[in-house]
Length: 469
Image 1 (cartoon, rainbow, N blue to C red):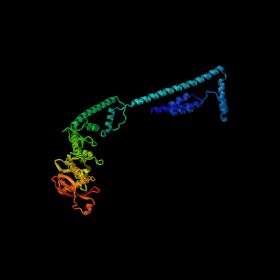
Image 2: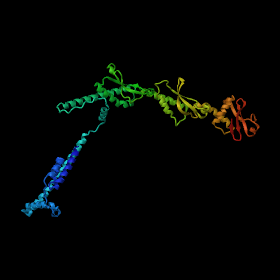
Image 3: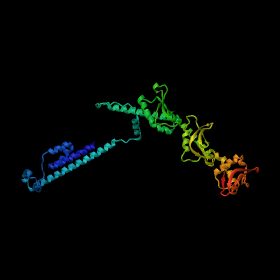
Image 4: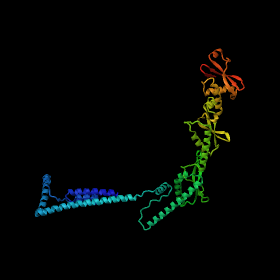
């Protein structure tokens, strides 16, 4: 505001200087009047009488308006009469005097402008010094005061005459503020220690710190002290789902027997919830146990279904029954041959289960498959490997699905796969027609370790080397 006022004064000053010059008066005189009295000064300069210090230029005189010609001639005659009795040297001195007077006016005007600029710079510097930068500590205090919505605001008072006791009141207020901050700071540190003792982790304590400061300010406004607060405790979340996944909230715990009003613990904030430190360790152990089960069964990675995400979510469910502690598999949920899908493709269902009672299970949603080297496929893989060693002597045109069908036929014929010695093509026509036999179809003959030979309803086309069931 000061800078704007000074700049406006300069504008009116220069305006006054211009009007004074046009009226034949001193420009410095007009500047000072306009600068000091603003628009009123400009009006004053405009109302001052006109006077001319310089003789009228004859060329200009010839071009003046005929109406004013008589007036101009009178003024010119007056000037001539005043200087007529002077000698040439005196006229030169008079001219030099007028020139020096003009120069002194300009020097005075220049000095005034310089002094004004110095005053403007000084005012700008003083205004910038008044803006004290906020330190982190002062910023924290400001945030505390802004957050404290429940503080009682004093009613606006009418301006009173300054009294001698006002500095004493300010000192008293400063003393009370310092006492308040000291007590809040001391109580804050005490409660932070209690939070760690009451199973709240350090990262959660840091997250709750600002909300705790706000709550302490509210308590101080109500009771003028914080002696009634004993500690901060963790209590289960009020919502069922949040409780089941182990989420807690922080509460101020009051000392026993203070007042009936303080009989219940007070929540610090309903916007922050957390997991207790001891529960976090339990969650980590449960995740580790589930992960060991997955590693054991050798589950294939599935880009569409994240098993780690499902394990992490289930590991926090320790506050509702039943509590699952292991992962088991089941045959795939498919309308096709479930056993074939399992043995050939390794497809399975996954379940969370209670190890002490495997009837209590929870399906893990997704399409899951086991790796070929999974121990759960060991029995099937060993049988496939044995049959593969026998059948490849007769044909190489087969796959894992053919081995699965061959295995089931052999078992249905009452033959123990582990007792098989070799496969051979039955030399006789047997159940084949003459045309089939002549077209290259042959029956597979299974010979066991006891030299017993058994034909099975599986054929090989010797021309195409394909298995036919």
